[in-house]
Image 1: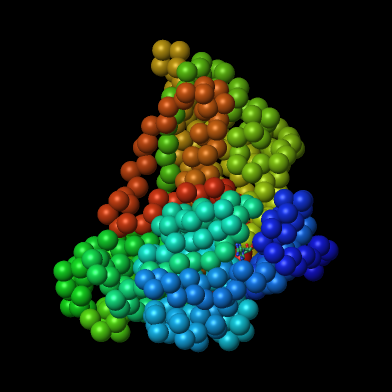
Image 2 (image 1 turned 30 degrees about the vertical axis):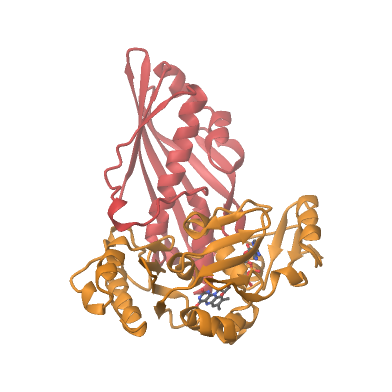
Length: 265
Length: 187
Ligand SMILES: Cc1cc2nc3c(=O)[nH]c(=O)nc-3n(C[C@H](O)[C@H](O)[C@H](O)COP(=O)(O)OP(=O)(O)OC[C@H]3O[C@@H](n4cnc5c(N)ncnc54)[C@H](O)[C@@H]3O)c2cc1C
């Protein structure tokens, strides 16, 4: 590693001050993505601002129709927390299948969504669970927050404080993981609400997206059979050494069916 | 797949051509370009900073001007090496046509990755190339004519139906190179 300044503020206000006072600062959560990037010399921030000591950024709260999960909550906690398991079990399940135990015990919700990796799991949950991202400045609906590949609506000095997930009637997440990293080659979350069904796809394209046709089919009939014969346009899907666009298109329908079945549809 | 674009610039063709051959103008218009120096005739060396996700990295890129046919057309080629992981190469054929004191600028851009990098994410490369080309030629045209008009020729664009969000690429194609190295190393 090369030299950088390390800060560990105790409050959001302090963190913001440090962000504006440093030359080329970077927020660090669990470091699961940021530290390897720095080791490869693909980033060289002058100052790291560690959010770990800010108590406001920890914790999970049940708000009735929704669950609030603070930004620094690690994946292992989302997976095991009683409020999440009772309120949105599909979300606990999703978090429990991220990466490996080391990653789940360091990686955070805030770090994952701020990074918006096209193969990450949480972006699917953000879209399917009609989530709103809370920052130190504003509330951002998930569809606006996830703006592109590795891109979000966040300003450079904006800090994610947490995410509000709407509680669905039922939901499930199914993914086809990369066997090495467990990142999603494709992943689909379906969620049924009183007046709508939401289907979100991750891993398949440059950014997670909602599949409108699948949502329509499931709105009138929440069953795996309702997806028979539907297709996803492979034209915009990712192609890499793991899977072709056509294979990913196939996986999306298959995983959507599995998710619907797992949700009891 | 090729990426095409066209701009209408309210400016004489000779002026547009001169600008296309002016290193200072190119530096201003290449997204993320920090410095650009003339190495040899029609050979430039550029330092470009790419920011994408956690990656913030600077690259040395060689840019060359080829197939010069003043004041009508040339090919702009850029190449970057990413060590053992491979290389990226981008090119844009530029054509100028004069109509009633105005200039029609047309370009066809390509981006290619080679070596191990070629195994990862060709989709990502296409999207980034489109963004890079749009940004460069958009900057360039507006620099000469603030109200320059962009005409969309890219027939390969067919999203709408799938619901996949329009990509709002801020980074240059080289950012994708950094990203690919990153992906390649971690997965
Ligand atoms: C081997 C491995 C396997 C993995 N497998 C999976 C997987 O299967 N599925 C999956 O979804 N993910 C996976 N991940 C990603 C992991 O889950 C982390 O969520 C991700 O790496 C982010 O890590 P972090 O929370 O430690 O954030 P960091 O690495 O500390 O930060 C990441 C980025 O977010 C910014 N940031 C962090 N917190 C905030 C905040 N509160 N506000 C604003 N910006 C912020 C940082 O500045 C940085 O740019 C894997 C990672 C590894 C290393």
